[in-house]
Structures are given as structure tokens and as C-alpha cells.
Length: 221
Ligand SMILES: [Zn+2]
Image (cartoon, rainbow, N blue to C red; front, side):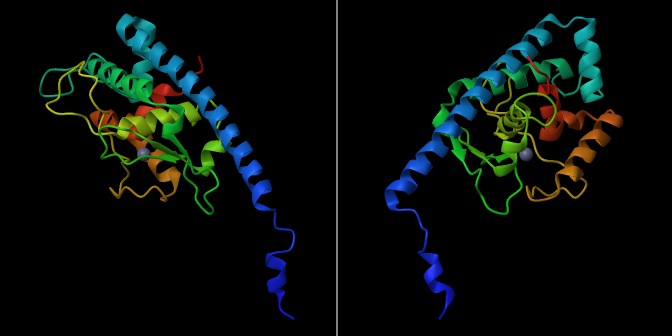
């Protein structure tokens, strides 16, 4: 006697399976709707602060990025603050264009550890893959669902020629680490430590690194 008969024993009928699957899908949509709404609030707050730009806003900016927001950081004379305001507007435009069905449920991917990922080369019809680790994150705050979505949206390619206020495309960010690879399976800690290193070095590369960009969106509305 083999154990083969076990495969079919206790297996739910097709109908039962569909009911379960539907419930899971509805929970996923409900979760994503909440995250989507909170992300909208966080983006709005950051945009308003970058426009207001009082001393408190400037101190917080410098603490997160390690760079003075008033420092000129590109060859066209744009300041760090202007680059981030442009980035927030871009992420806002991507966020606004998304529907709940553009978040793809991969939360039951076996053996995977990622929170989310995207095809960063896309410049339209954006979709975002939501992975198993997303379920373990809080909605807002440090290493949250909202900061993760902002991280992912910052990856999308930036339309060229670059001009501020274009709200075309993402921020063209990378997942930088000392090895300069882009493997999402690489232990998260390496990326996080490298992001901290960039802040401590006061490197302008923070504005090209998604692990630094996401830190600006770790607030709770
Ligand atoms: Zn990334």
C-alpha cells in the first residue's frame, strides 16, 4: 500500500475551493484599499511639508537623508528638496493612476521573503506584486506597507528629458548595496545597512536609492 491515496483524501471539492479563494481575494482587496488610502495621506503630508519648508521640515529632512535640503545636488542646479518634491509628485501621480486590481496578490508565494516588487522598466500600466512579507508589516510607520509601496513606486523609470514637475514616471531608483546587485532575495539587512551608510556619509546617492527614499514615507498620518 502506498501513501498515494492520501492525496485525494480530505481534498475540498471544487466549489468549496472557489469559496475559500474568493474570501482570500476579498481580504486582500480590503487590505490593499486601506493601505492605498493611507499612502495617499502620507504622500499629501510630505508634499505639503516640502512646499511649506519651515525649520522643522528642514531638520527632519536632513535627519532622514543626511543631506541639507537646500543643497544643490544636480548639474542643473536643483536642490535636494526640489528633487524630493518632484519625486513625491511623481509617486503621487503613479498612486492616483492605480486601481486596487493593479496590486497582484502573491502573498502565498511559498518560500519567498519579499514584501513587494515591480517590473521597474515599465512606464505605464503599472502593477505592483505584493509578497508574503507584506502581511507581516504594519500599515504605516517604519518598514510598513505604505513605505514599501512608496519604495516600489520610486523604482519606475523616470521619463526623459528630466524636468521638474513633469510627474512623468517614477524616480528611477535602485536597490543599492555594496555589491551593486539587484537581487530581491538578498538579505534585507544588507540594503538597510547600506542606506544608513549613505546617510552617514551625507551622500547625494540617497536620492537614487529606494531604501533611502522609503524612509521619508515612514510617518503615520
Ligand atoms: Zn526595491
